[in-house]
Image 1 (cartoon, helix red, strand yellow):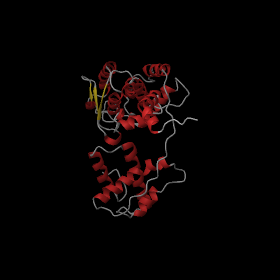
Image 2 (tube, rainbow, N blue to C red):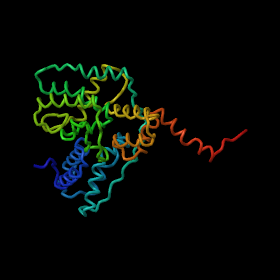
Image 3 (cartoon, rainbow, N blue to C red):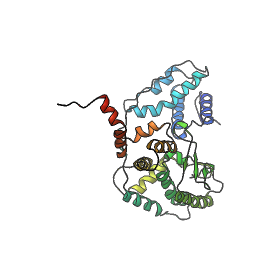
Image 4 (spheres, rainbow, N blue to C red):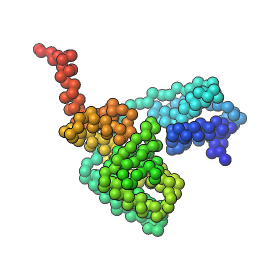
Length: 320
């Protein structure tokens, strides 16, 4: 039975199967927005069995209450759908315009050592309200392992959520990250202490969900949702501070701390930054530097050291 309800269900399902086969599908964003568009077509174009320009344009038009970034997130799956159909000569409608994404000005929270200590203490001391409840015990065992994994490896929250059990080699400590932003498969190596914790977690969680599919399960075949991560992080963080912070900022913390330690590490800064970039799943070193240049104090010093003399030769200082 199709999960779509409009007369375009077959095209939608074909597109979804293709993206999943290419490992370029995200249920929480692509899936959710395609289902909403499907219901929109069902309610407003009940007799249409072919995608039309009117359908696409009316849905993709930016709403008055919508920021550019929100609009892009909502319509991007439909833009991809139109491209998919056009490439296969299944439609001749035009690809809708995409608003220019606004530059984000939010500065991530910089965790102090004391904040991190208190945060992980809160994770370790989570008290399930029903000790015999499988879901509550799942939370108790998952909190310390999940958030420490983000902190110690720099994984994106989605990457950690979608880790399958087979993606985590508990013998070598190597994590194979397949479901990732930009679909750039990469690997991360856990610290020995993190690997030991993951072994303990795997042993105990397996008693709750024998033969589970995902490393951090939501039932035997499901994985943790974005809302689970958001809610659980907030519940732990509010015991530490009233300042705004998110689970994703553990990744920022990982990057900044590592960049600050690259100087005098025994390797060239470029080589060290390359290793960091690859482990974090960035397409290039330039992206790593771009994202964290303003957040890591040492980056400004290194760039000045590497470029100042050449810059001064090109544009000598004016003497008054």
